[in-house]
Image 1 (cartoon, rainbow, N blue to C red):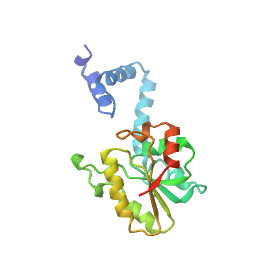
Image 2: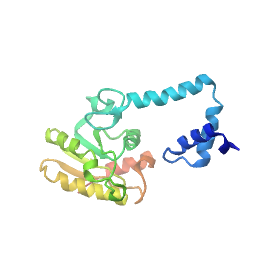
Image 3: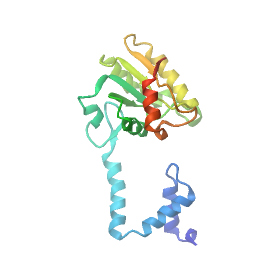
Length: 200
């Protein structure tokens, strides 16, 4: 019956367009919106609009933020000589839950995937090289996912970074199986991966 209600169907389709949301869950979410009061629905819509308006990329690390500079880059207590390269802002959130890593980050916003049209020039590598050229960074930790695309990206970055003789380049030692994703790893696994990182 729900598929005959055009506005409900359109709402479910919008939820279904989100990553990881199937048709059934999308319809459940659409019905949840219908159960909201007008005020709650307005607040929900406003939260989406505000997030889109206020959240942007940190000019330093390319992580998402709603400030001029993200809180991690702004934190003077962080180790500014170490930068951990990740593919996605969600990985930064996961790494921060470990509470063991004290350095900075650099977010690539993707991994090399020619099949999906993602070539090296579409990643935030130029911004990374600009940071390293400033001379403060002494270690780069490559923390891309242990997938075919993640490994290809890690190899590309390691070749790119060989030009910097005074910068140590390491790769996480994974306690996570090949083909899995860092944002879903638990804190202990990420801690062990950080502790066991290796030169590449």
